[in-house]
Image 1 (cartoon, rainbow, N blue to C red):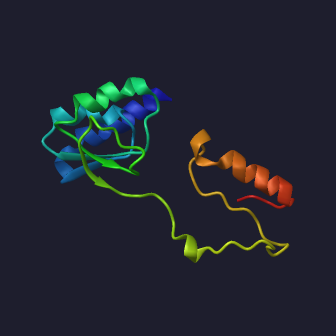
Image 2 (cartoon, helix red, strand yellow):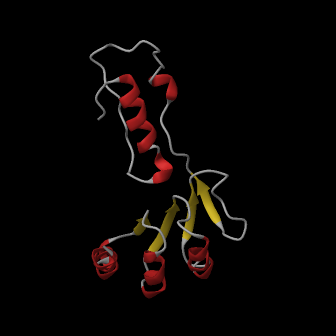
Length: 132
């Protein structure tokens, strides 16, 4: 609900004197307060929910330091200070075509169409196993 999102962001900015840095993962909403405080702000952009919100990122490009999660997610008209990839070390989790029959499917991520939760549910269904 937008009311609770706005209350959450407002509280952070009301308490900025306690922070050296605000690091936001919260889409565009916190950008709007960035010029009202002296505290530095970094925003990791996890993708753009719509083309319409690009205007907000452009408007605060001179104030907020942007971090991209991949080259594909970068916009040429925004200034980025870093790129930090998502992910896990796949070598630490080798694929096993014949899993233990007591095994399960693990989904780790937020529930969003781009994150693959539906794929994980379908894999668990086909494997006739539980999902966590």
